[in-house]
Picture 1 (cartoon, helix red, strand yellow):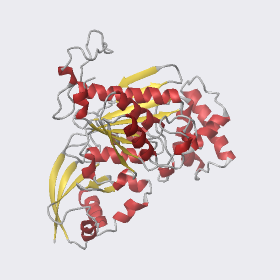
Picture 2 (cartoon, helix red, strand yellow):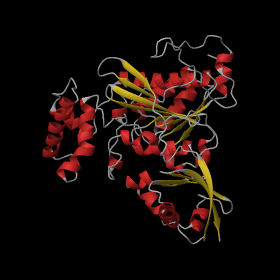
Picture 3 (cartoon, one colour):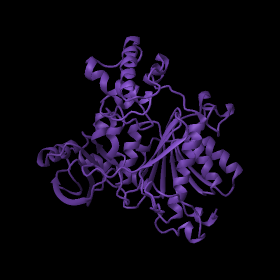
Picture 4 (tube, one colour):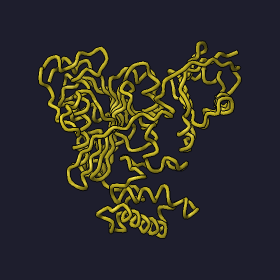
Length: 425
Protein backbone atom coordinates (compact mmCIF):
# COMPACT_ATOMS: atom_id res chain seq x y z
CA UNK A 1 0.00 0.00 0.00
CA UNK A 2 1.23 3.52 -0.77
CA UNK A 3 1.76 5.21 2.59
CA UNK A 4 2.14 8.70 1.16
CA UNK A 5 -1.31 8.44 -0.40
CA UNK A 6 -2.98 7.57 2.89
CA UNK A 7 -1.16 10.43 4.61
CA UNK A 8 -3.48 12.81 2.76
CA UNK A 9 -6.74 10.97 3.47
CA UNK A 10 -8.82 12.16 6.45
CA UNK A 11 -11.52 9.75 7.61
CA UNK A 12 -14.25 10.24 10.21
CA UNK A 13 -15.73 7.18 11.92
CA UNK A 14 -19.13 7.78 13.51
CA UNK A 15 -19.89 5.13 16.11
CA UNK A 16 -17.32 2.74 17.56
CA UNK A 17 -19.37 -0.26 18.57
CA UNK A 18 -18.83 -3.69 17.03
CA UNK A 19 -18.77 -2.48 13.41
CA UNK A 20 -16.79 0.67 14.21
CA UNK A 21 -14.12 -1.38 16.02
CA UNK A 22 -13.62 -3.61 12.98
CA UNK A 23 -13.55 -0.68 10.52
CA UNK A 24 -10.97 1.18 12.60
CA UNK A 25 -8.85 -1.97 12.84
CA UNK A 26 -8.97 -2.34 9.03
CA UNK A 27 -7.98 1.30 8.52
CA UNK A 28 -4.89 0.76 10.67
CA UNK A 29 -3.84 -2.22 8.53
CA UNK A 30 -4.44 -0.09 5.41
CA UNK A 31 -1.95 2.50 6.74
CA UNK A 32 -4.51 5.28 7.03
CA UNK A 33 -2.75 7.93 9.10
CA UNK A 34 -5.52 10.38 10.03
CA UNK A 35 -8.54 8.90 11.80
CA UNK A 36 -11.17 10.83 13.74
CA UNK A 37 -13.82 9.10 15.87
CA UNK A 38 -17.14 10.37 17.22
CA UNK A 39 -18.89 8.35 19.93
CA UNK A 40 -20.27 9.17 23.38
CA UNK A 41 -20.79 5.63 24.73
CA UNK A 42 -18.81 3.99 27.52
CA UNK A 43 -17.44 0.45 27.48
CA UNK A 44 -19.80 -2.14 28.99
CA UNK A 45 -19.24 -5.79 29.75
CA UNK A 46 -21.58 -6.78 26.90
CA UNK A 47 -19.21 -5.05 24.45
CA UNK A 48 -16.25 -7.29 25.17
CA UNK A 49 -17.51 -10.25 23.13
CA UNK A 50 -17.25 -8.53 19.75
CA UNK A 51 -15.46 -5.17 20.15
CA UNK A 52 -11.78 -5.90 19.65
CA UNK A 53 -10.27 -2.82 21.29
CA UNK A 54 -11.78 -3.34 24.74
CA UNK A 55 -10.95 -5.49 27.78
CA UNK A 56 -12.38 -5.78 31.30
CA UNK A 57 -10.04 -3.03 32.51
CA UNK A 58 -11.74 -0.59 30.09
CA UNK A 59 -15.29 -0.99 31.46
CA UNK A 60 -16.72 2.38 32.45
CA UNK A 61 -14.36 4.41 30.24
CA UNK A 62 -15.36 6.25 27.09
CA UNK A 63 -14.82 4.11 24.00
CA UNK A 64 -13.12 6.88 22.05
CA UNK A 65 -10.62 7.43 24.86
CA UNK A 66 -9.63 3.76 24.95
CA UNK A 67 -9.32 3.40 21.17
CA UNK A 68 -7.20 6.54 20.80
CA UNK A 69 -4.89 5.49 23.64
CA UNK A 70 -4.37 1.94 22.35
CA UNK A 71 -3.77 2.95 18.74
CA UNK A 72 -1.29 5.71 19.56
CA UNK A 73 0.57 3.53 22.05
CA UNK A 74 1.18 0.89 19.41
CA UNK A 75 1.31 2.90 16.17
CA UNK A 76 3.33 6.08 16.60
CA UNK A 77 2.70 7.26 13.02
CA UNK A 78 -1.13 7.14 13.24
CA UNK A 79 -2.88 10.28 14.45
CA UNK A 80 -6.28 9.80 16.12
CA UNK A 81 -8.69 12.59 17.09
CA UNK A 82 -11.56 11.77 19.42
CA UNK A 83 -14.89 13.51 20.03
CA UNK A 84 -17.04 12.39 22.95
CA UNK A 85 -20.19 14.00 21.59
CA UNK A 86 -23.37 13.38 19.69
CA UNK A 87 -22.95 14.18 16.01
CA UNK A 88 -25.63 16.89 16.25
CA UNK A 89 -23.41 18.79 18.72
CA UNK A 90 -20.70 19.33 16.10
CA UNK A 91 -20.79 22.31 13.73
CA UNK A 92 -21.36 21.59 10.07
CA UNK A 93 -17.96 23.15 9.32
CA UNK A 94 -16.41 20.29 11.31
CA UNK A 95 -17.41 17.75 8.66
CA UNK A 96 -15.80 19.54 5.70
CA UNK A 97 -12.34 18.60 7.02
CA UNK A 98 -12.82 14.97 5.93
CA UNK A 99 -12.61 13.10 2.64
CA UNK A 100 -14.83 10.29 3.93
CA UNK A 101 -17.37 9.76 6.67
CA UNK A 102 -17.94 6.12 7.59
CA UNK A 103 -21.17 5.50 9.50
CA UNK A 104 -21.17 2.56 11.91
CA UNK A 105 -24.47 3.47 13.52
CA UNK A 106 -27.37 1.62 15.07
CA UNK A 107 -30.23 4.05 14.40
CA UNK A 108 -32.04 5.72 11.51
CA UNK A 109 -32.10 9.26 12.91
CA UNK A 110 -28.32 9.68 12.93
CA UNK A 111 -28.14 8.39 9.37
CA UNK A 112 -30.70 11.00 8.30
CA UNK A 113 -28.60 13.67 9.95
CA UNK A 114 -25.30 12.63 8.34
CA UNK A 115 -26.97 12.33 4.95
CA UNK A 116 -28.24 15.91 5.30
CA UNK A 117 -24.77 17.09 6.32
CA UNK A 118 -23.21 15.73 3.12
CA UNK A 119 -25.46 17.88 0.95
CA UNK A 120 -24.91 21.01 3.04
CA UNK A 121 -21.18 21.04 2.33
CA UNK A 122 -19.52 22.64 -0.67
CA UNK A 123 -16.81 20.01 -0.46
CA UNK A 124 -17.51 16.54 -1.84
CA UNK A 125 -17.31 14.43 1.31
CA UNK A 126 -18.30 10.81 0.58
CA UNK A 127 -20.43 9.02 3.17
CA UNK A 128 -20.19 5.22 3.41
CA UNK A 129 -22.88 3.82 5.69
CA UNK A 130 -22.82 0.31 7.12
CA UNK A 131 -25.38 -1.64 9.09
CA UNK A 132 -25.50 -5.13 10.59
CA UNK A 133 -28.16 -7.36 12.04
CA UNK A 134 -27.55 -10.99 12.97
CA UNK A 135 -26.26 -12.71 9.76
CA UNK A 136 -27.22 -9.87 7.42
CA UNK A 137 -25.67 -6.53 6.59
CA UNK A 138 -25.91 -3.58 4.22
CA UNK A 139 -23.74 -0.78 2.87
CA UNK A 140 -24.82 2.45 1.21
CA UNK A 141 -22.41 4.73 -0.66
CA UNK A 142 -23.54 8.36 -0.73
CA UNK A 143 -21.54 10.46 -3.17
CA UNK A 144 -23.38 13.63 -4.19
CA UNK A 145 -21.46 13.77 -7.48
CA UNK A 146 -22.53 10.37 -8.85
CA UNK A 147 -26.27 11.06 -9.24
CA UNK A 148 -27.32 7.94 -7.32
CA UNK A 149 -29.74 7.73 -4.41
CA UNK A 150 -28.92 9.37 -1.11
CA UNK A 151 -30.21 7.99 2.19
CA UNK A 152 -33.28 10.24 2.12
CA UNK A 153 -34.22 8.90 -1.34
CA UNK A 154 -34.66 5.43 0.16
CA UNK A 155 -35.98 6.40 3.58
CA UNK A 156 -39.29 4.62 2.98
CA UNK A 157 -37.37 1.33 2.74
CA UNK A 158 -36.58 1.51 6.44
CA UNK A 159 -39.30 0.08 8.61
CA UNK A 160 -40.57 2.36 11.35
CA UNK A 161 -39.55 5.70 9.83
CA UNK A 162 -43.16 6.76 9.34
CA UNK A 163 -43.96 6.07 12.96
CA UNK A 164 -43.73 9.28 15.02
CA UNK A 165 -42.51 7.37 18.04
CA UNK A 166 -39.82 5.53 16.15
CA UNK A 167 -36.98 7.38 17.89
CA UNK A 168 -36.81 4.40 20.25
CA UNK A 169 -36.64 1.83 17.47
CA UNK A 170 -33.44 1.09 15.59
CA UNK A 171 -33.07 -1.19 12.58
CA UNK A 172 -29.56 -0.96 11.21
CA UNK A 173 -30.17 -3.00 8.08
CA UNK A 174 -32.52 -1.86 5.34
CA UNK A 175 -35.65 -3.99 5.85
CA UNK A 176 -37.52 -3.41 2.62
CA UNK A 177 -41.22 -3.39 3.36
CA UNK A 178 -42.38 -4.32 -0.13
CA UNK A 179 -40.28 -7.43 -0.74
CA UNK A 180 -39.20 -9.14 2.49
CA UNK A 181 -36.29 -11.56 2.19
CA UNK A 182 -36.17 -13.04 5.69
CA UNK A 183 -38.45 -13.83 8.59
CA UNK A 184 -36.98 -10.83 10.43
CA UNK A 185 -38.14 -8.54 7.61
CA UNK A 186 -41.67 -9.89 8.02
CA UNK A 187 -41.61 -9.36 11.78
CA UNK A 188 -40.32 -5.79 11.42
CA UNK A 189 -42.96 -4.96 8.81
CA UNK A 190 -45.82 -6.29 10.96
CA UNK A 191 -44.42 -4.63 14.06
CA UNK A 192 -43.92 -1.15 12.57
CA UNK A 193 -46.47 -0.85 9.80
CA UNK A 194 -49.26 -3.39 10.21
CA UNK A 195 -49.75 -3.40 13.99
CA UNK A 196 -51.18 0.09 14.51
CA UNK A 197 -53.12 0.04 11.25
CA UNK A 198 -54.99 -3.12 12.18
CA UNK A 199 -54.92 -3.15 15.97
CA UNK A 200 -55.63 0.58 16.37
CA UNK A 201 -53.43 0.78 19.47
CA UNK A 202 -49.84 1.47 20.44
CA UNK A 203 -47.45 -1.47 20.54
CA UNK A 204 -46.34 -2.54 24.01
CA UNK A 205 -43.23 -4.70 23.60
CA UNK A 206 -43.80 -6.17 27.08
CA UNK A 207 -47.32 -7.33 26.26
CA UNK A 208 -47.23 -11.04 25.34
CA UNK A 209 -50.54 -10.83 23.45
CA UNK A 210 -49.07 -8.11 21.21
CA UNK A 211 -45.99 -10.20 20.47
CA UNK A 212 -48.14 -13.26 19.78
CA UNK A 213 -50.24 -11.29 17.28
CA UNK A 214 -47.11 -10.02 15.53
CA UNK A 215 -45.71 -13.56 15.42
CA UNK A 216 -48.83 -14.98 13.77
CA UNK A 217 -49.14 -12.18 11.21
CA UNK A 218 -45.43 -12.31 10.39
CA UNK A 219 -45.67 -16.03 9.68
CA UNK A 220 -48.58 -15.35 7.30
CA UNK A 221 -46.47 -12.75 5.51
CA UNK A 222 -43.51 -15.12 5.31
CA UNK A 223 -45.69 -17.78 3.70
CA UNK A 224 -47.11 -15.22 1.27
CA UNK A 225 -43.61 -14.37 0.03
CA UNK A 226 -42.47 -18.01 0.07
CA UNK A 227 -39.73 -17.45 2.62
CA UNK A 228 -38.13 -20.78 3.52
CA UNK A 229 -38.11 -20.29 7.28
CA UNK A 230 -41.80 -19.36 7.45
CA UNK A 231 -42.24 -21.45 10.61
CA UNK A 232 -39.80 -19.36 12.67
CA UNK A 233 -40.07 -19.53 16.45
CA UNK A 234 -41.96 -17.28 18.83
CA UNK A 235 -38.67 -16.56 20.63
CA UNK A 236 -37.23 -15.10 17.40
CA UNK A 237 -40.24 -12.80 17.08
CA UNK A 238 -39.77 -11.71 20.69
CA UNK A 239 -36.08 -10.95 20.04
CA UNK A 240 -36.88 -8.80 17.00
CA UNK A 241 -39.72 -6.93 18.72
CA UNK A 242 -37.49 -6.11 21.68
CA UNK A 243 -34.61 -5.26 19.33
CA UNK A 244 -32.14 -7.58 21.01
CA UNK A 245 -31.07 -9.87 18.18
CA UNK A 246 -27.36 -10.52 18.65
CA UNK A 247 -25.05 -9.57 15.81
CA UNK A 248 -22.55 -12.27 14.98
CA UNK A 249 -18.85 -11.47 14.85
CA UNK A 250 -18.60 -12.95 11.36
CA UNK A 251 -21.14 -10.43 10.04
CA UNK A 252 -19.19 -7.56 11.57
CA UNK A 253 -15.99 -8.77 9.93
CA UNK A 254 -17.59 -9.10 6.50
CA UNK A 255 -19.39 -5.74 6.52
CA UNK A 256 -16.30 -3.93 7.85
CA UNK A 257 -14.23 -5.54 5.09
CA UNK A 258 -16.72 -4.50 2.42
CA UNK A 259 -16.74 -0.92 3.75
CA UNK A 260 -12.96 -0.63 3.63
CA UNK A 261 -12.89 -2.30 0.21
CA UNK A 262 -15.23 0.42 -1.10
CA UNK A 263 -13.03 3.06 0.50
CA UNK A 264 -9.98 1.56 -1.21
CA UNK A 265 -11.72 1.57 -4.61
CA UNK A 266 -12.81 5.19 -4.27
CA UNK A 267 -9.30 6.33 -3.38
CA UNK A 268 -7.71 4.09 -6.01
CA UNK A 269 -9.71 5.54 -8.88
CA UNK A 270 -9.36 9.18 -7.96
CA UNK A 271 -12.73 9.90 -6.35
CA UNK A 272 -11.04 12.11 -3.72
CA UNK A 273 -10.64 15.76 -4.65
CA UNK A 274 -7.04 17.04 -5.06
CA UNK A 275 -5.52 13.63 -4.34
CA UNK A 276 -3.74 11.61 -7.03
CA UNK A 277 -5.40 8.21 -7.52
CA UNK A 278 -3.52 5.13 -6.40
CA UNK A 279 -4.04 3.62 -9.85
CA UNK A 280 -1.45 6.09 -11.19
CA UNK A 281 1.16 4.28 -9.11
CA UNK A 282 0.26 0.78 -10.26
CA UNK A 283 -0.99 -0.34 -13.66
CA UNK A 284 -3.07 -3.20 -12.28
CA UNK A 285 -4.40 -2.25 -8.87
CA UNK A 286 -7.81 -3.85 -8.77
CA UNK A 287 -9.25 -6.43 -11.11
CA UNK A 288 -12.96 -6.10 -11.85
CA UNK A 289 -15.08 -9.01 -12.90
CA UNK A 290 -17.56 -8.96 -15.74
CA UNK A 291 -20.85 -7.24 -14.99
CA UNK A 292 -24.23 -8.94 -15.12
CA UNK A 293 -24.53 -8.13 -18.85
CA UNK A 294 -22.57 -10.59 -20.93
CA UNK A 295 -19.58 -8.98 -22.62
CA UNK A 296 -19.92 -5.68 -20.75
CA UNK A 297 -16.88 -4.72 -18.68
CA UNK A 298 -17.65 -3.13 -15.33
CA UNK A 299 -16.42 0.46 -15.05
CA UNK A 300 -13.77 1.19 -12.44
CA UNK A 301 -16.04 3.96 -11.14
CA UNK A 302 -18.95 3.05 -8.90
CA UNK A 303 -22.09 2.14 -10.80
CA UNK A 304 -23.94 0.92 -7.73
CA UNK A 305 -25.28 2.68 -4.65
CA UNK A 306 -25.95 -0.23 -2.31
CA UNK A 307 -24.47 -3.54 -1.25
CA UNK A 308 -26.53 -6.18 0.52
CA UNK A 309 -24.97 -9.12 2.35
CA UNK A 310 -27.32 -12.00 3.16
CA UNK A 311 -25.37 -14.40 5.32
CA UNK A 312 -28.43 -16.19 6.66
CA UNK A 313 -28.75 -18.02 3.31
CA UNK A 314 -25.06 -18.57 2.67
CA UNK A 315 -22.47 -15.99 1.66
CA UNK A 316 -24.48 -13.90 -0.80
CA UNK A 317 -23.37 -10.36 -1.68
CA UNK A 318 -25.53 -8.27 -4.02
CA UNK A 319 -24.44 -5.02 -5.70
CA UNK A 320 -27.34 -2.95 -6.93
CA UNK A 321 -28.19 0.58 -8.03
CA UNK A 322 -30.90 2.82 -6.65
CA UNK A 323 -31.28 5.98 -8.70
CA UNK A 324 -31.94 9.39 -7.23
CA UNK A 325 -35.54 10.17 -6.35
CA UNK A 326 -36.41 13.31 -8.32
CA UNK A 327 -38.59 14.45 -5.42
CA UNK A 328 -35.93 13.89 -2.77
CA UNK A 329 -35.86 16.71 -0.23
CA UNK A 330 -32.08 16.49 0.18
CA UNK A 331 -30.14 15.84 -3.02
CA UNK A 332 -31.91 17.83 -5.76
CA UNK A 333 -30.27 20.77 -7.52
CA UNK A 334 -30.48 24.21 -5.92
CA UNK A 335 -32.00 27.55 -6.91
CA UNK A 336 -31.80 30.89 -5.12
CA UNK A 337 -34.56 32.76 -3.28
CA UNK A 338 -34.48 36.06 -1.35
CA UNK A 339 -36.69 36.60 1.68
CA UNK A 340 -37.09 39.30 4.35
CA UNK A 341 -37.72 38.78 8.07
CA UNK A 342 -37.25 40.65 11.33
CA UNK A 343 -34.73 39.60 13.94
CA UNK A 344 -37.59 39.01 16.41
CA UNK A 345 -39.31 36.56 14.05
CA UNK A 346 -38.94 32.87 14.87
CA UNK A 347 -37.61 29.98 12.83
CA UNK A 348 -41.15 28.59 12.99
CA UNK A 349 -42.40 31.66 11.11
CA UNK A 350 -39.98 30.84 8.28
CA UNK A 351 -41.11 27.20 8.18
CA UNK A 352 -44.80 28.22 8.13
CA UNK A 353 -44.09 30.75 5.38
CA UNK A 354 -42.48 28.09 3.19
CA UNK A 355 -45.37 25.70 3.87
CA UNK A 356 -48.10 28.19 2.97
CA UNK A 357 -46.43 30.30 0.27
CA UNK A 358 -44.97 27.43 -1.76
CA UNK A 359 -47.03 24.48 -0.53
CA UNK A 360 -43.96 22.50 0.52
CA UNK A 361 -44.75 19.46 2.67
CA UNK A 362 -41.28 18.24 3.63
CA UNK A 363 -38.70 20.84 4.56
CA UNK A 364 -35.11 20.70 5.81
CA UNK A 365 -33.18 23.88 6.65
CA UNK A 366 -29.50 24.23 7.49
CA UNK A 367 -26.89 26.96 7.72
CA UNK A 368 -23.15 26.54 7.24
CA UNK A 369 -22.91 26.01 11.02
CA UNK A 370 -25.88 23.83 12.00
CA UNK A 371 -28.90 21.80 10.97
CA UNK A 372 -31.81 24.05 11.97
CA UNK A 373 -34.82 21.97 11.01
CA UNK A 374 -35.52 18.55 9.50
CA UNK A 375 -39.10 17.37 8.98
CA UNK A 376 -38.20 13.75 9.71
CA UNK A 377 -36.53 14.77 12.97
CA UNK A 378 -39.73 16.45 14.14
CA UNK A 379 -41.72 13.36 13.14
CA UNK A 380 -39.39 11.28 15.27
CA UNK A 381 -40.26 13.50 18.24
CA UNK A 382 -36.78 14.85 18.93
CA UNK A 383 -37.33 17.64 21.47
CA UNK A 384 -34.27 19.74 20.63
CA UNK A 385 -35.48 20.22 17.05
CA UNK A 386 -38.96 21.23 18.20
CA UNK A 387 -37.44 23.76 20.59
CA UNK A 388 -35.37 25.30 17.79
CA UNK A 389 -38.60 26.33 16.05
CA UNK A 390 -39.27 28.77 18.89
CA UNK A 391 -35.88 30.47 18.53
CA UNK A 392 -35.87 33.95 17.04
CA UNK A 393 -33.36 34.83 14.36
CA UNK A 394 -31.56 36.99 16.91
CA UNK A 395 -31.31 33.99 19.27
CA UNK A 396 -29.93 31.84 16.46
CA UNK A 397 -27.33 34.55 15.79
CA UNK A 398 -26.41 34.65 19.48
CA UNK A 399 -26.07 30.85 19.53
CA UNK A 400 -23.73 30.95 16.53
CA UNK A 401 -26.19 28.94 14.39
CA UNK A 402 -26.43 31.64 11.71
CA UNK A 403 -24.43 34.74 10.81
CA UNK A 404 -25.72 38.25 11.45
CA UNK A 405 -25.31 39.30 7.81
CA UNK A 406 -25.46 37.45 4.51
CA UNK A 407 -27.50 34.57 5.92
CA UNK A 408 -27.42 31.73 3.43
CA UNK A 409 -29.70 28.82 4.33
CA UNK A 410 -29.65 25.52 2.47
CA UNK A 411 -33.28 24.43 2.01
CA UNK A 412 -34.44 21.03 0.76
CA UNK A 413 -38.10 20.37 0.09
CA UNK A 414 -40.29 17.73 -1.51
CA UNK A 415 -40.56 19.83 -4.68
CA UNK A 416 -37.18 21.47 -5.15
CA UNK A 417 -34.00 22.54 -3.38
CA UNK A 418 -32.64 26.07 -3.16
CA UNK A 419 -30.39 28.42 -1.26
CA UNK A 420 -32.41 30.90 0.78
CA UNK A 421 -30.89 34.35 1.27
CA UNK A 422 -32.44 35.78 4.43
CA UNK A 423 -32.35 39.56 4.89
CA UNK A 424 -33.02 40.63 8.49
CA UNK A 425 -34.58 43.98 9.32
